[in-house]
Image (cartoon, rainbow, N blue to C red):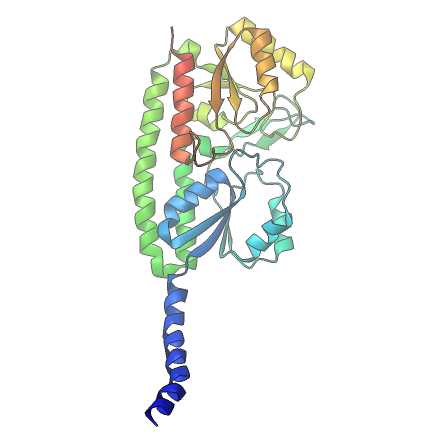
Length: 308
């Protein structure tokens, strides 16, 4: 008799355990957020902390401009509770992907509130004629990255109000880190002689850095990497390097290095190393986070441009 009572009551006891455990697991589950590219993904992770699981569509060392979504991206968006995009025309493919995914997640544009820089573009996407296009690379000014963080914080708080205080605390700490970073950049650039604050990069990704910190960047491609630099563009830049004695050419992690190697070889400019414009490095690389990326670029510029 006692054994019968024990066995018959066991399923009820298990059911009670599972019923009680279910809400606990649901409460502890991380919020799923999707960011379009690696730099944005890091900013979401900094604000979300342990409460948020972040998935990035465009992986480290990859170019978001001309990204081609894969079927798994639609499934990733469908499972998300928040989608974070840059905006300013960076992700020309994202609207179609969101529609195809059927996701019900709110979409936050991280660059909302940023004062956009307009870049001149020609009919082929190069940055020197025929109309204007918003420069999407706003994160290259640390002050704009702070705007991104505030927008991400507010979006997380709206969809997960129970943890709004956590997101606010994370954002406050990270914004203090970004304030310190901005000071580092300004101090380092001010130590470079003004006549040497000119470099060549693959595409025009540093307009906001120029406006904020006073360095000049020249690029054979415009604000997008979607089109090839023409021989005329390359020849023009080689002549400009020679005429203005521009010290260094920098390779970008998202670009084929051969074009910049050609420009360096034919102009006599030194190759100043690799910089990270539109994507982070992998976790084992020199720029696995936004802060590390900015510091890596700053160190590369400083090493190449300081008067010798």
